[in-house]
Amino acid sequence: MKKTLCMLLAAAALLPAAACAQPVEPDLSAYEDVSGMAEIPIEILGELDEETREDLVAAPKYVALTFDDGPRADTTARLLDGLLERGASATFFVIGEQVPCNKELLRRMKAEGHQIGNHTYSHVRLLTADKDAVIEEVHKAETLLKEAVGEGSFWLRPPYGLIGSERSRLIQTPMIYWSVDPQDWKLLNKDKVVAAVLEAVQPGDIILLHDFYSTSVDAALEIIDRLQKEGYDFVTVEELFRIQGVTPQAGVLYARPDRIRNVS
Image (cartoon, rainbow, N blue to C red):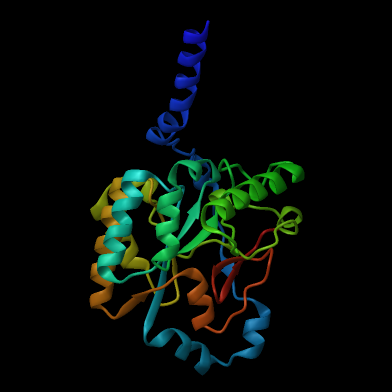
C-alpha cells in the first residue's frame, strides 16, 4: 500500500513538468472576423494641432512590437535572446495558463525592460463570455502574473482584439489592440510576415505577432534588423504612449496611442 501511494505521488509530481513541455496552442480562428477602422480619440484631436501630431511621430521613429499567447519555453527564450542582442524592447501579452511553467522567463522579461500584459487566463472570447467569466479570466491571469513578477499594471489585450462596450466597462486597465497585423499565425512563413510588416509599418504603430511560433520569432528579429537600419526604435507599448504624451484610460481599446478601436 505504501509503495503504491509513493508511486501515485511521484506521478502527480510529474504533471506540471509535462504540462510545461506541451504548451497549448490557442484557437486563433476568430481573427478572421476582426474588421473595422480605429478612430482618433476626440480628446487627443482637441488638444493637438496638426503640426504637433506630425512632430510626435516624425523623428525618431518609435514602434512597439507586441507578442501574444506565450510565454513558450523554447520560442520565447530565443526571442528574448534576440531582443537583448539588438537592444530592442517589446510587450508580451501573456496567457495565464502558461504562467506557472514559465515564471523564470517572465522574470527575465521584467528584468530586461519588457512590458508584460494580460491576455486572459485561457484565451477566452471576451466578446461573448458572461460578465462573471470576463472578470474571472482577467483576474485569474493577473493574480498569476503578480505571483510570478510582483505588482504591476498588466494592460489587457482581449483575445482576437474583441470585447463589447458593456464588458469593456469591467476592465480596470487600458486595453491594447494593434495597427499592423501580418497574420503571422496563419502564414507561418518568416519572409511573408516580414514583407507584410515592412509594407504597412509607420511610426507610432503597434505590431501584432505571436511568440508561440518559431517562424514569428525569426520574422520579428529580421523586422527589427531591417527597421533599425531605417531609424526605428523599438519600445514597449507603455513607453510609446508616454513618448506621444497620451495617458491611456482604463476600459478603452487602443490601436495606437493616437487611435482607438470602437468596442460597441
